[in-house]
Image (cartoon, rainbow, N blue to C red; front, side, top):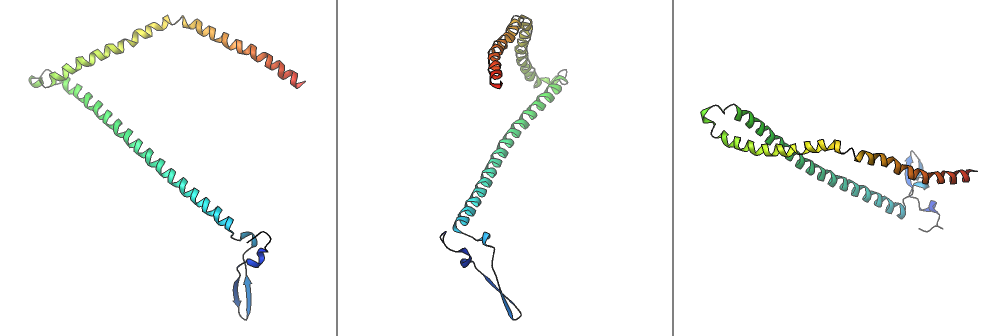
Length: 165
């Protein structure tokens, strides 16, 4: 069909019989199905399906990542609980004679103690915080730095004032 063709001649009409009368009904011209409309409809459908597939894949990837994270968290929590229970159980059977299997656990406890001094090293770093009083003047210098851009901003304000007049 070309632009010069009369679309009213190409409408598919339905024949309806009421008693002895025959009536013909036709769709509104604005709703005619053209090749352009069919192409647009197919493109829209393809886009909808593609978006749906992308969303589905993203959801599956997220679920996989979430399950991996939860498994790791669960394993970490379980190990922490076992360690806490082992520490409590290790403290109670220590006076008992069959505490020999717990003794290696005690040997592991001193291994944990060297980790504690490692934590103690950050504590002196906190003591170094008062030594950071020298950086405090640097903070005082920091307002001086914004002051310099403020001076640069002042001519811009003058330029704006000049533009407004």
